[in-house]
Amino acid sequence: MDLMREQNIQSAIDAVQNGATLRHAAQQFNVPRLTLSDRLRGATNRPAGQIEARKLLPVQERFLVDWALNEEAAGRAPTKAQITRMA
Image 1 (cartoon, rainbow, N blue to C red):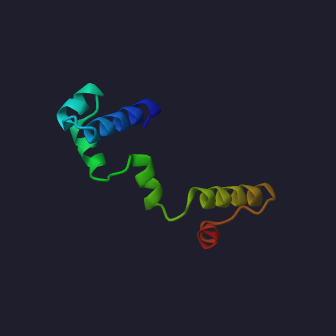
Image 2 (cartoon, one colour):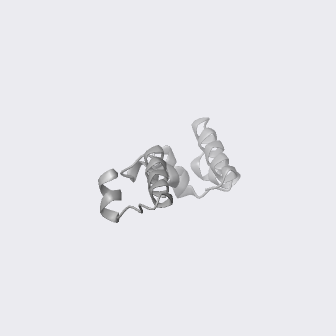
Image 3 (spheres, one colour):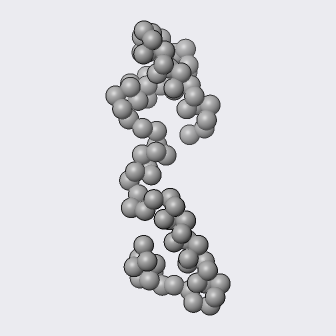
């Protein structure tokens, strides 16, 4: 999701919290009403939700990728089973 869209959603949330109707804030900031309603009820944006659903944190995933690439560069390309154990 691009930064401008996320800023519009946050501006619409602020407007509703300051007394604007959901419909008016959604129209003013060009945000879908359902998205605005969901966010007001605590939903997160898609990238944040996807991070929470992953088994590894981004830093752990980056470590695993770097490890696998280093092993491959050294002529010891890890198998899927080795990568799974390492994870």
